[in-house]
Image 1: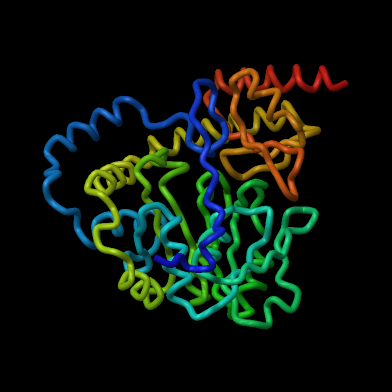
Image 2: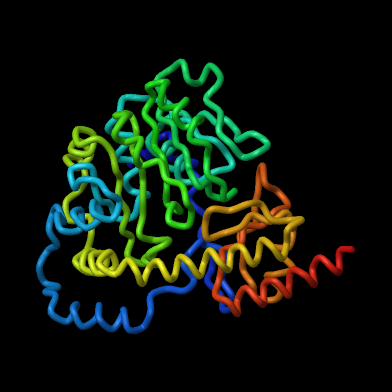
Length: 335
């Protein structure tokens, strides 16, 4: 059995062993769902037949999402998280190149390399902003933009995103963290048919364990994506719980508000080290990964362009208290 040449030395995504402690390393919604909300969900699930396949096209969920973002269900295709939608988009559009702006979300290049595409890396500038200048835009490309960007936390300027859209290249705009920000560019869908926006219920909606994502674009583009998506891509449980969460947006918003408040508390505590953030995490100019790990506080150790920094997910109040105390001790010992 011969393995494809491009996959013989393929580097898989690094997994991390789960250990007891405070986990602020995966950008999850640390507050989760309220117990009474979970109880309501579990009562409904008792009546859900698990011996039947889910709908091939969960229209009700698409309608709920359309109402949530102020769009139409024809503009939405669902995925088992947003990650599996990336290779579908790569396969659908004729291009041999994917442009990414590091430091950014690793899965853009992961799936591009897996599909045998060339990855052009155009680094963010000193303010962590994108650029569409250069010869890389003269050839047909798929351009991946993350806004707010993971791992830097900043929203990309609207005018720069429009500059990229004006090149007529396909643009994948990842807005996984948009709910933690005051800025979204979903409205650009109406003007640019070369734009696909990725959204998820993993972050703000605290449903990372269910893997519910979606793409928003022109009806023609979305219809094409839907036609090549595998059937039954979302489980019955994922569909049911996602619908319930969208019907309880006020409950979700309270969680978002708490995270934003805690985010600003941490940023204010470390003004000399924290980068501005429109997400549920903060990039810190502190090489404190090992120091925190020794105290059972797990954060993301940055590499490459961000060597010597850490990315910290906003946790619950008491978790943030412990993080702040440990980081202040770290800073004090380094002086």
